[in-house]
Length: 76
Image 1 (spheres, one colour):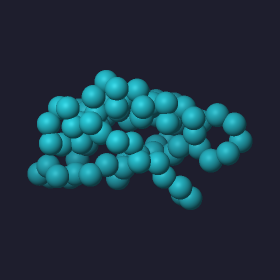
Image 2 (tube, one colour; image 1 turned 45 degrees about the horizontal axis):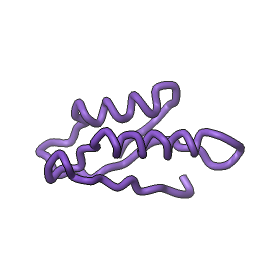
Image 3 (cartoon, one colour; image 1 turned 180 degrees about the vertical axis):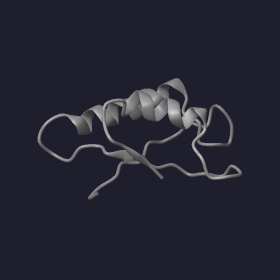
Image 4 (cartoon, helix red, strand yellow; image 1 turned 180 degrees about the horizontal axis):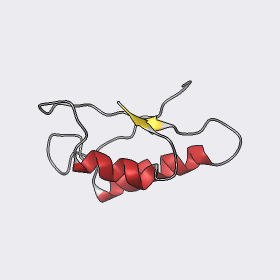
């Protein structure tokens, strides 16, 4: 891994990092941009985690499956 891109969240769904439809569209555009051409490609995503336990929730799985459905990916 050599780079990362932060995806802003408008927090319209509360204080947690929950992507709105607009945020999710921006997230997917950033992934698509990194998937074309011969430059670096997106390999996964990270996000803050302020909930109890250490696991992916339904929102995490939805975001990752939409953006990385055909790749070996990771989330941290």
